[in-house]
Length: 373
Image 1 (cartoon, rainbow, N blue to C red):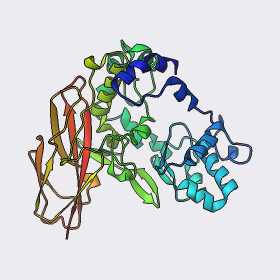
Image 2: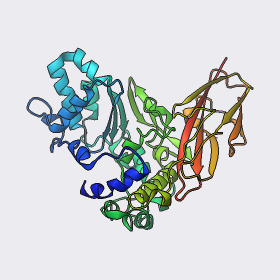
Image 3: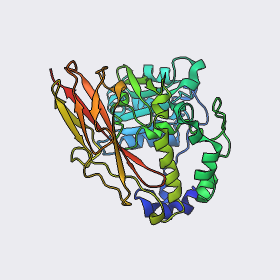
Image 4: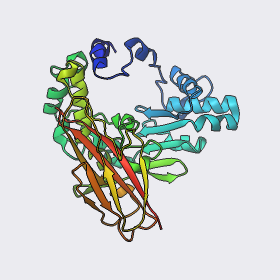
């Protein structure tokens, strides 16, 4: 917190929203130092569990996003307390406000929680067997793909050296086997990536994928690790590692914000999809064999950098499994020919807009084409 406080004044020169140090420190609450079902129940409330309840009780219609980095015991305690005090109806009202991304089931109580509190919107980033923990979605942050982007050289150049007191505190060594670099692990970061409003992911649709990975519905509102195929490799980690070039460039740019003036650093572009400047998914209808036009015309960059548009089909999130042709996929004006056999199917197209700054930054939009009968 102290190191953040030393760079915060420079950060706000680049972007709004960085909270004052005192406000951020006040939001930190202590949790239960013990884990598991044995420490859930009467007399086990913590600052953390009370804070979860108070946040969910706010007069705010938005979902309460909960990114679990360490363990779920405090969330379980919050759920227990609400059920104990308010009954099943009160618990249901409370639970429907929550959207949970659980990294690794570190307290080993996910199955118990889902049994005790059914109906939670719950992303369980955990392989089916404990022996496969390195295969989990979130490991894609540092395993697979281009591992030079999580190397010691990259870390020293872009984070630790000449990037101010916050960067200097970054851990110089971590355990990353089988990645040989022993640098930049951050296995929990995808749980935060999942909620970033960068235009590619939608927290209401974990099956759509994004920087935080992709997850398939298992039952009710429970989602588990899905797999993507990238470069001939198919596993759960690729659903995160495929985005690594973009999110590491984002990391490097924000570290620059700690020490550089706005004129000397890069800032993300602002994509427009078919004339719409917001971040929402664009829903389109089309008939088989139709040609659908997709446009990024009007996209801008706050630094005046050149922009490159790239369009691609996300096959794992599309219900249609055949080939789809995209004409002019690397231009602002792309054209998609709907396959003749795609009736009643959906097609997910991702727009990437990358600027020409250093490091280059990317923002996204998603178009979902629903093919009519």
